[in-house]
Image 1 (cartoon, rainbow, N blue to C red):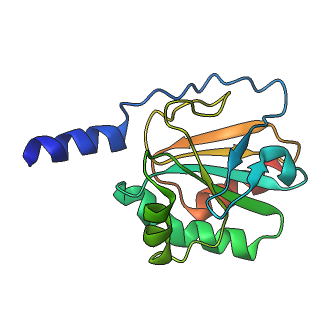
Image 2: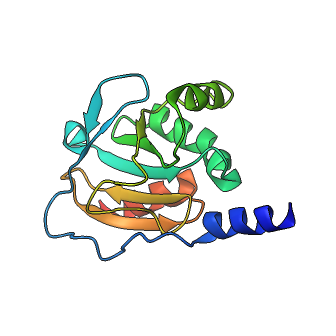
Image 3: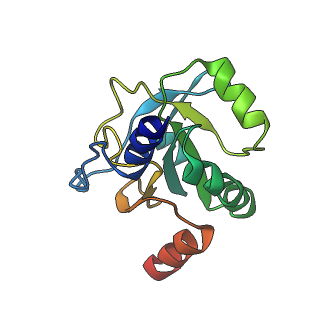
Length: 158
């Protein structure tokens, strides 16, 4: 049991491999399946700031972020939050989990064996990448992030 907790904490704190050197010279775009069906592409949200949040059901800091990210998504028409579910599980398990957390933003399903480029697999969960209205990756946060931190960055950039 202790070994499992140590391994879980290690994954949550950073044994994955996301590259902070992602190409920021051009807008980022990829398409992923939505939990509710269909697909969504990052380019669908051009004109808004986009908060790309990698998370997993087993990650306590990820779960702690959900209420603030939902509130941010709901309160700010200029910001779209996208939850990238980085976990190898079935959609029913995600749906059951999310029914308890009242997530109001779209959830996209990531193939953990073929994560979207240019970001790839996150180094740690949660990881949040902020795209400006043009679709350029302008900031990434490794570990938990708050609504206040995201809004402060956006206000300073505008």
